[in-house]
Image (tube, rainbow, N blue to C red; front, top):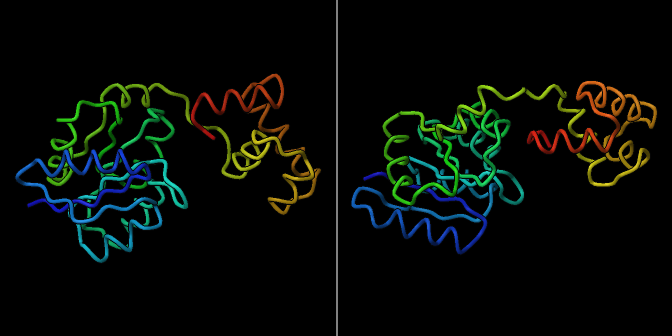
Length: 201
């Protein structure tokens, strides 16, 4: 019997996924949680074989939860589910050593098959997304530059970004200039557009 932990913040979707998996004779859903920060405590309590995690969850996203789970319970394999079929998201997931990465619009029967394959030690990745990731441009921005641009995308001005990141306004201005140059953007707004479309924010 494959013991599964399911993490999804949307109650209806979580219930539907749990119901699908419970139809399988060899799969047992041992825990359901609504947020990323609840994954590791639930996993330590229930000792699942496979954790099925949504990428986007409150408090801690699924990829961060997967990385923490790998440190705390390395025997538990992870299958990520996402609506965001972006190469950069897949790269982050693979860096966190997840065993599988599926899009939520995959056929329902594929979920149980993916759980079995991940449990068996295989790596399961949507083929179209894998191909897109191979050909996609890697994020040229540093983590700090991503932080700056994310705040700028949210409408923060120089002073607000500087205060939030404990930087001077001049340093923030330098970061924004470097970002525009690295992305070959026309201006800050164009840089936000380019980074958002690429899945880097």
